[in-house]
Amino acid sequence: MTPTPPGSRKAMTRDALEIGTRVFLRKPTQRDCEEFLQRMRDSRRLHRGWVPLFTSAEQYETMLKHGRAENRLQSLICRIEDGAIVGQINLNEIVRGLTQSTYIGYHIFVPFDGKGYMTEGIELMLRHAFRTLKLHRVEAGIQPNNERSIELVKRLGFRYEGTALRLIKIAGRWRDHQRWAILAEEWRARRRPRLRTK
Image (cartoon, rainbow, N blue to C red; front, side, top):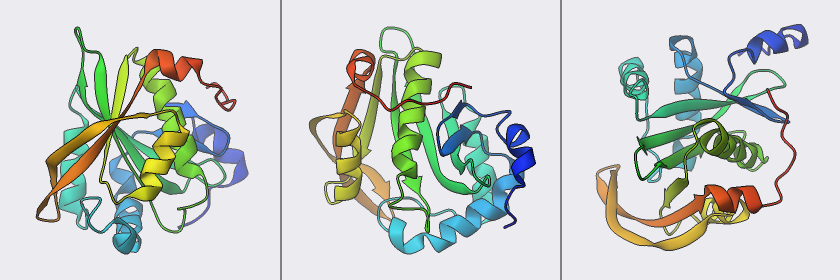
């Protein structure tokens, strides 16, 4: 995977949804298939039991198709330094009308875990959800044994609201998920790190 030359960074982030200090968010494309699938394969051990694994071009194409639905927003987390795909973050089941809410899903790839990229990626997506999409509520469902993810959303201001039993089927098993949420007014009230505007 060839790093992106510094001179092309502006072009690289031209279609970004949000741009931060070290990462930016952009929608996945067909051109990302090979890199994305390799990242998934490299991260199989990290994701086992927590994230559905995509290992084929057909699965990737299905993912892109689902991401084009009006009630979803798919995004890759990419490193500004070289454009590398470091993770994925999605808004699922966006509901308008009286609710104005969504469910956020995310995962980081090896070898980028533990470096703060996901923290910035989620913060960027929250900014997009609350400022650009004008949503009121973002909820994250996290398995109770995923301690790192729970600590992550706590740092970002999410509140624990209870546990949904056998909520999502992953790797052939129905798994409990804790429900963590943040409201637009709670997000605005937090002291956030400065993020560069597009």
